[in-house]
Length: 302
Length: 285
Image 1 (cartoon, rainbow over the protein chains, first blue to last red):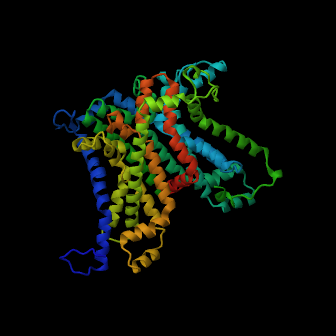
Image 2 (cartoon, chains in turn cyan, purple):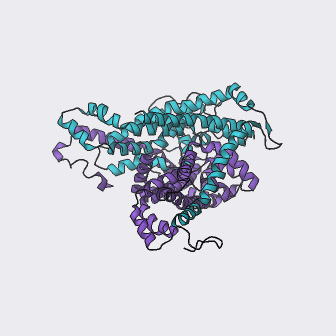
Image 3 (cartoon, rainbow over the protein chains, first blue to last red):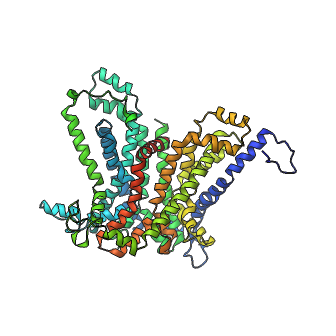
């Protein structure tokens, strides 16, 4: 304990010594969070009020980026796409994962193995699996799905080449990749419900469905809210799958699969319109903030 | 994981196995196999020749490792593989060290500004990475960090999530342990490193596994921050490789398999820790 500098008293109080340790521990982290998290956040807001193509000096243009963005048809198309991923993807993935978790929780034989099968896709690399699914969606005879459809005498689907089906096709890939996580969280939630509730219901002769509706689902509410938010945020930030499944025309065909993050990427790193891209990130931030606050509000007024 | 299952329901006598259970089990098994079908097909096709890829049999007729040899010798996959491993390991070590140091400090010291630091760090969870990438890119460009390992790593060296997770766990460590160590004259760093850290190894392993997997599969920032192929991480390299290969699906599947194999190995070796870690993280988070 020779943590004394020459001009201070040789014996520091316990309190002071501990405070020195604390701030020694926190020095680098405080620097990190200030420079790598807080400063960039403020910078993103600041940039959103500028016109800047990296070549010339940035010039302040007030709210012009926001005005241009809200007036552009492309932005609203992307906005609709992003919410299509969210509004269709979240309920489907939640219902699927709950049903699987509910039944998987009751299975004893081969439980760990079955759980592993469902969980495995979650830890795969999204860019790699994007290509696997892209291959699945190819026309026959390359694509597995169309080959199977052909073999059973059904018509072919265009999947990624269709302006109608491309977005759902990519969404399936994203749901598939996230399902394992949601199943595990639902199972953890199911396990945390005290067994005594179920035993009491059994003694009273309450049926399975009534138990599910009256005991399981209400007690699972915090888990469900967490997963709704987690899944929503995941769909709002979708990028890897879309980018990899549509590399020949990112966000295509005709921009029908393009989500907000891909638009941000293209605005910033293909067109180098840093100000406009920053304004788009502010929109994303605002949406995510509203969703997080909604979660807090729902759980507080429980 | 069998141990965690005991005590939930008593073992059922054979006579009580109802048909409903068999149906449930069968449907769940079919669903489980469907879930890994894309992964199985990926491996299957990676073992086929170009001429065989229209043959959709899952077990290849004449499995060959020729694609792997070609991809690993002709392409830059070994380099990308090492890049990914290096980046993921460095970021993981940094997170395990700093997130737990900060988590410990916030959990076990009472000092002025503690609440402020905690809330400040926690509030960064609200800021999406996508909002930060443009300022990071500009900062990295100014400082000459673009197209370097440090450039890929610096945004993730500490995370609020990891700090929060570790703080939760350090709070369960009894103060008596720490006081006793102080009586023995150990300094605060040694107390953290030698006394407190060994008591939270489950949380540390969960944090390490997630940080590693998250960085191994990371795509968005590495895509933005690297331009020369030598510095690509595996996911970014795979994308550029797949774009070049265009319709040589057996080669693309081989590349995808190479990117997937390490995560599969990590999962098979550490399944119980991963699943428990997801539960921990999900419930605490």
